[in-house]
Length: 167
Image 1 (cartoon, rainbow, N blue to C red):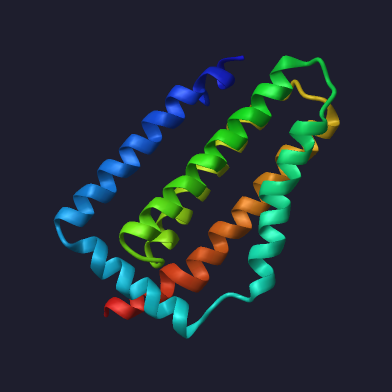
Image 2 (cartoon, rainbow, N blue to C red):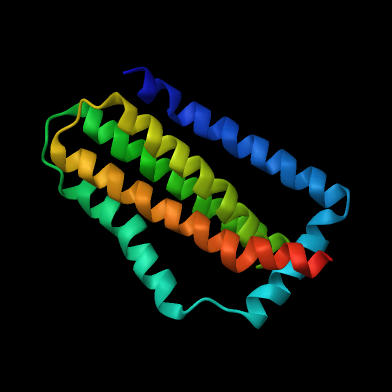
């Protein structure tokens, strides 16, 4: 169960502190405003369809919450896995709200990208254990696919246009 130790709350806290430090550094160097303005322009010019966020929120937020709430399994490791998934997810949402309020909505792209990568890492590590029931393994694989799609979507719709925007 080393992976549960690797993805524990303390590591998630460290991850958030590093992200805050990185954002603070970018802000001190006046890069964060440039990044925010560029992403805001890209978002305004090419918004994602409204249904994308609704579907993504249902599948990556609501579904895990429902599974956790109605999971009547006595298996503590499954509950811990779901708890760690939800803790990282909650920290992402809090960070996005915090940064959007302080800087602007464009920076949410940066936060979403960083946390999506960390989520893929977390899910991949959890799948490496391989001691789960088929249902929890299927859930983890499904979430991994969703977060990989999100990373791909951010690269195609935000990162590549950002690169050309700066040219």
